[in-house]
Length: 327
Image (spheres, rainbow, N blue to C red):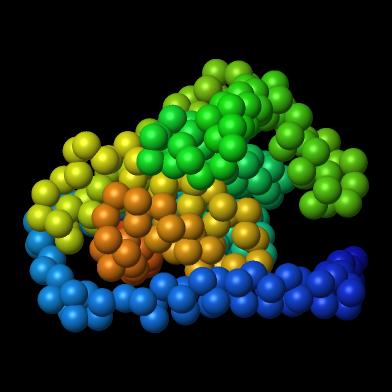
């Protein structure tokens, strides 16, 4: 068509693909060795006879859906923080639910690119969606690592793990807390955006109030994720682990944060489970730790599908009501 020119998409250099493949091979080899040692020592008869509480399984589903809603609300707050407009919140939740499946693609860019690709559906510019999606990943990573390191650093269960354990975790927590301040977060997002785009594209500034709102929602999402983990533990044991819940919350946060850092894996698959099993074995048997880790992974996929269906139903219902009002 005259007057239009297609911009070719640059291919990933062969050297980068090779390094990506080798890094993925190393990570999965380490995970397989660790999981192999764990699985060989499991009491499979105890696993097969483990009862599950239907009530706590429903609690897992409820907390998982609430967690997804808070994640979408966090991203919406970031979009508003840079001056973006969200006229239709149910449609935005559907958009977020669809793009959320991009995290199952190795490389951790699938969700960001998916949101930019679906941008016309929402009426928000692609640069705003790209920057805010990147900010969301950094924000959730920082919150997860801060909560995980702070809680586990204060726990007596891991005190003898490394020399100066508490001082190391305290220092790391302070650094991450500084990263969560709005001015530092804005500069970090701008730097990460320039690295990703290989240029000096201007990055919209985040309003302090909007960033604080997003930070509050991200902390609430992490708290609900901790309740989700506690519900999974209760589904196996029959009662909510009140005394060890904080440790479970910190364990899931740290495992989730390391899963984000392990960008060569789809949604941190394998890395998160290995870290989670290692930590949960301090509050229960290895069999229970494995059961809970598997339940959390399977429940995550189920929650994603259910949330997508509920978001589609809510968005279509709003669209139907708007259409009937117009007529």
